[in-house]
Image (tube, rainbow, N blue to C red; front, top):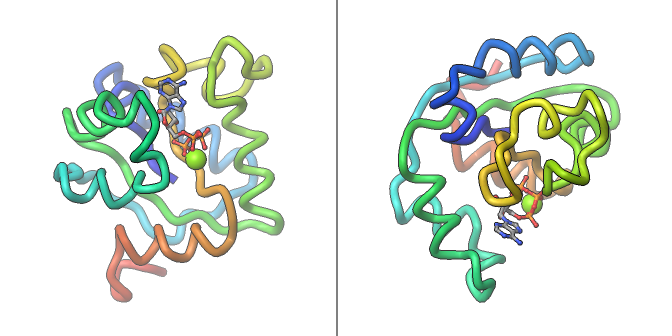
Length: 132
Ligand code: ATP
Ligand code: MG
């Protein structure tokens, strides 16, 4: 997962991590860092033809993010339920995006969309000695 720059600017790191651990996720790796433009382009490569791509890259690089590796049975699917829909207007009550997202673009958190991508993204953010 990542906590995105909007949520960090608003001081929500602690509240979001509390919701994540209360929902039964174990934190296996955690850091505050900032994506370079090159990192963000690589991370969101699948969206490069989308009209919002440039705004997405600017947003994701404008300040620090928190990256984390989470462990739980059924983690990918359960985490997406916990964060809610991409657009906070459509997100269910009590979800992280409903509580903390600003808009469809600035939506507080990222969750991997498959186990395969979770592994790729984990290696993108962390070295072996940072994973517990
Ligand atoms: P994420 O991958 O960040 O967890 P997601 O899987 O819910 O979010 P994606 O479709 O993968 O949504 O989009 C990636 C990110 O691109 C979104 O989280 C959002 O920041 C941005 N985005 C997606 N759709 C739009 C849109 N219509 N307008 C502006 N930004 C968008
Ligand atoms: Mg996605």
